[in-house]
Amino acid sequence: MSAPDQAQVPDAVRALAEADFGTVAQRFADAGFAVGTPAKGILTVKGSGGVRPAVLLSVGVHGDETGPIEMVAYVIEALSREPSALAVDLMLCVGNIDAIAAGKRFIDADLNRMFKADRGALAGTFESARADEIIAATDAFFAGAGPVRWHLDLHTAIRASHYPMFAIVPDLIADGRKADLIRWLGEAAIQAIIMNPKSAGTYSYYSSEHHGAAGSTVELGRVGTLGQNNLAQFADASAALDAMLRGVQAPPAKAAPHVFKVAQEVIKLSDAFTMGFSKETPNFASLKRGEVIATDGETVYTVFHEEEMVVFPNPDVRVGLRAGLMVVRID
Image 1 (cartoon, rainbow, N blue to C red):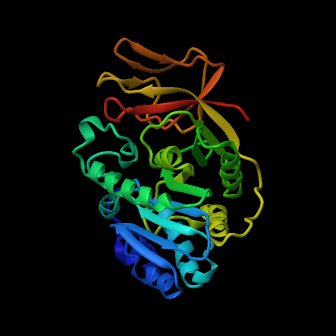
Image 2: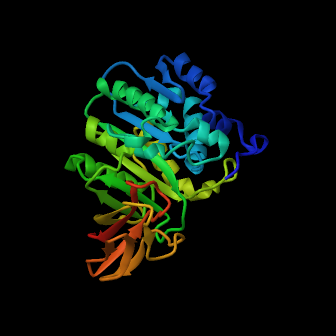
């Protein structure tokens, strides 16, 4: 995807995409909030007078996933015009600013695989250094936070999906907070939730594992061009997010999300890796018992439940990384 035409991008959206927090930050500071910028692309806004919920919002971890940037830009812009309505301590993170500017998914490697100690051959990449900055800011933000901690890492998918709005939720989140998160995801019109038992180095898993946050990677439809996304598709998610930040009740969920669990991870072991279906296969496509998912030399991945659905199939990932998830519905 090419870089966006900045002349067509509204000011609030352009400012967030470029991590220019100047106007928004000043409004919150003028209202008496403690405002900080601990690293490029990161804004913190903290209130005084008691413990408040701590909410981490991240967008642009993949530079070509622009819809959430637009959605969050408008939510934060509106809130900054009535800053006293902010009922939480907020950290806003624009993940891969350079990739956003270039209209690319990443510069050297996938940033959303860098939130782990062992990065192997990727340790010297641009995204590895950026992940270190984000981790340090995240650790500092949650260090003094109260028990109610959220992390919504907002994305859009690179392929079609039978459930255009879906989320990945770390299974290790405490049951009560997990229930709160699932309820919020329903209010945001998320149609499917995948309970994930294992980290793949994602940002939301990091904050859940290390800081007890109710964290989720939230996929909000398809990749689009900055300034040209159809914001109507984000209406429910935007309303639910605005309600969270203001500390008010969101409109009730129109339907409960379907819940899935991970049946197996498909890891690319070598350059001989091939998938048993097209790389354009949509997320949540159904495969039946015995069907071949992928082959990788002598390793053959097959479906072993009556039915499994494929999510994030990508044969082009680097060797050693996850090339897909197989999930089964549990609710």
